[in-house]
View 1: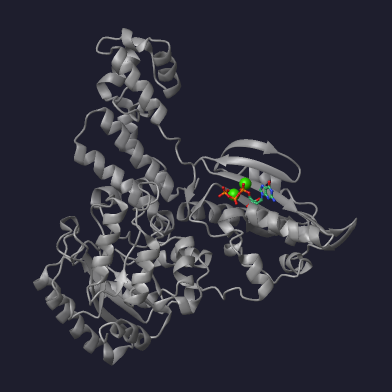
View 2: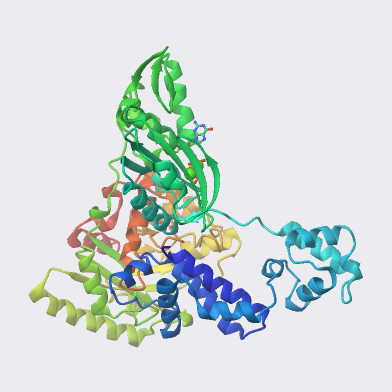
Length: 579
Ligand code: DGT
Ligand code: CA
Ligand code: CA
């Protein structure tokens, strides 16, 4: 039974839940919650690292103890601490703790008095006036419970891309090993590179005598079989991820792939085009009357409605059909187009690796240059650099570049990720900013100011003559908080006017700017920079997620600053100082 990062994260979350119920030290509880988040957002499978004998990465909040636990979980499938906690703590009513106003003591009281252990039972008891009969509760607290039950948001069951990828790749490898299986492809939102997926839609082509359906249902990660047929089945994996598998004939492959790649909105528009030509499109092919005229390849389906192949990332009915017809589809950026990374941290602030280690990792990623942009001092949680520390780093980078020049062409740019203070001024003085090659600015506090004030704050920061790049412009953190309220058209106008790049931050729970905002920036002629925001040498792998989002945002290589040579990048960065 393979152990995925998400399984490790689930165990850490369970530990945190149980510690919470037993009133453990809040710091310890938070350590497990943070570790769960870090593990599930990490771009490499721990199992693979351990199986290949790779040293576990240094990750924020994961010290020796948690590393040992990860090792234990991956190699044994269990965590002794969790097993012990399960024995010590009474049967858990963790889901009740999610109801605002219910702490451990009250949950236990409700359990012992009324036998309540689920949200459904709680709701029933509150509705029928039973809660108020328990000592310590009254009609008022009963009403409060009903109110917070109403406010409980449905859990978001979508899976972030890196996690979906880990489940998908293991399953695809498994299916490919089954006799008689030819092609295996994951369609749906997964193929369209969406930042989250609701479920996996897998298509397989096979020879006649394959037992792939049986093997699929027997996959050891399957928890529940929802539907089981000769050519299509649906299951839920132990992780909660649903997977639909469809067997398609080779001759129908293109039509099926197009249909199940979606999006639904795109499919509807394509079918409308077909109808206008007297054709009918479904998952088996393109038909004129009863005659099938296309469907073996996706190209043939598009060609039947006079379109070139539209890349899956664009299939959202956001203008791709018109562009295809006019011959103006963009040549979408690819990972290998990136020549550098302009947002990287080291252990001088909250990164985990040294400058040298980050240089090695960037070169291993195939990059030719990288900007070191540690945090400024305001962000105390990140051990930001003050003027003197930054000055020392600048000297160190100068020395390294000189030494490197003997052995390689790799260039380190001197930079900083400077905090934008609440009034829009910057956390470092111009005297030090002018010594840098690149100045990134970003908001890390007061993310929920009113729209007008937040916009003013950003615009003022962007007026500083040294600013080159606005990092993670909207501040969204998937599953944690939405985007800040800002007037993006105003920000984009200012960016263009002041030669400031907007970032597409590639951390998989940021992906900020998102797809539609990337497209908007492109249409406005604003330069984008796709950066890893690496905090460890493993994080250059984030760039693949940024590229997925960039492609959904219609970006071509020429829209992205760090596809250029170091000379072009320097020219862009310096162009604003000449103004
Ligand atoms: P998800 O799973 O919520 O992340 O999003 P999708 O796009 O993967 O949606 P899903 O799994 O419900 O369906 C996969 C594809 O199948 C979808 O993108 C388009 C196609 N499809 C599903 N239902 C319909 C439908 O009612 N009409 C059409 N034309 N296509 C559909
Ligand atoms: Ca899907
Ligand atoms: Ca589906």
